[in-house]
Image 1: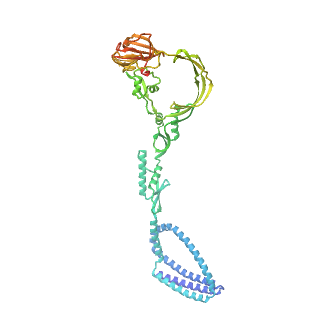
Image 2: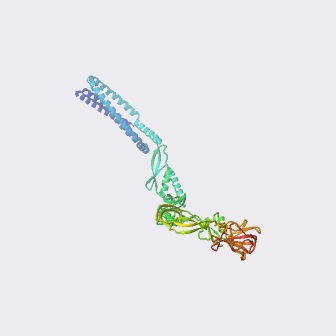
Length: 592
């Protein structure tokens, strides 16, 4: 410490001598200057420079001593100082810019002061000399005081100020910024986490999610590195974003396409083209060269989805599903005693509806074991097509009637035949699964004109015995056996008519006008009346107790022809009513 004081004294002495020599030389030069104002300015600069030089010299010595003593402590705080400098750099730049601006202002003020001094220097040269001498003496006093202070404080105050700034800067830095880590996966940044522990928790979540998706255990083995960073105080890291990025990096999910029908997802494929081709296969059976457009009546949608990467696609199974039925067809097996109408009624259908479902079945010739369709299958996908058709249509010859008094009313006879015409029709036909549901005529062109047909029509009053063309019930009673197969007398047999039970002797009437062609006993039918009607149909009235007409009689609709009995093969009083068309028995209920 004593050596240090001696060095300071020597330095101060040397500085004082140097300053005195410099001042003497300055005085001599100033006397030679013609411009007293300029000389005055130089004198100020020299005086200020001397003081500054003395301070600088003192600071160098003091700083060196402080550095030597504080080197170990400085080494410990070096990282904090470096960080502080890095964070303080922007503020330093701002200060530098402000200082430069202030220096420029000071420079301008100095110029102004110089000009002012120049104007007054001419009058105050003597005073300036005196002032210079006095101030030189004051500078010596100041230097002495500095020396005394330095002697008292071997550690420079500047060091204390520096340490204080570092401490304040560290506190301010910690309040302004939060330490975090940037996560990298195979060199690619994925996000920011608060700590390594948080990253470990995120990786655990990712492994759990992937295992849940794939249905098997999964270990995340990608290389993850962390790099420290600083965030503004209050800024939160986004662990969920990092987790999602790592999950995406696993490849646990893959892009695919789904197909849905009326909102229900049915299956998946790797490309939308595969699903489109499956739909084309469903529609193909209903497409022809005349098809101009087609669509599905259901809401069919193909859309992108994400699926587990281990998903296996089965195109055949999905194709079978799309081509299959939503509801299967239902059939009824004909049993003994069933009739066409009874089956229709049990199925909640009319006879006509059941006949449309079974166009190849003869309703009056059912056999035990036959299968009747009572409900059509409902396909999963219904194909609606539109086709254009061009065809020829026959235009019926127009008919004109000529009265003929020799013919009965309601009867006609050809006088002169005309010729049918021909028209070409273009139509737009809508079909559902190949079945026509709508036909819209687009155009019609006449190919051949039709010519008129002339017909005679009778004006002669028709007798009451003539047929009306419709059948009335022959009597009132209870139906005990319908048309079709039935169990009777210990076996199964086909019942060709309708049994109507009524008390003995109840009147039986003709179902329609016609000619009586048989009266008498007819085997198992017993006492029977047979009437042939004008349209060729024949009706039977069997098991009668008495007969009221004779063969060849003309009868009218509702005329009494017999009475209820139990003759022939019968188990009770009833009338067996039978209708035959072209010699074949038909269900009477279809005509009554």
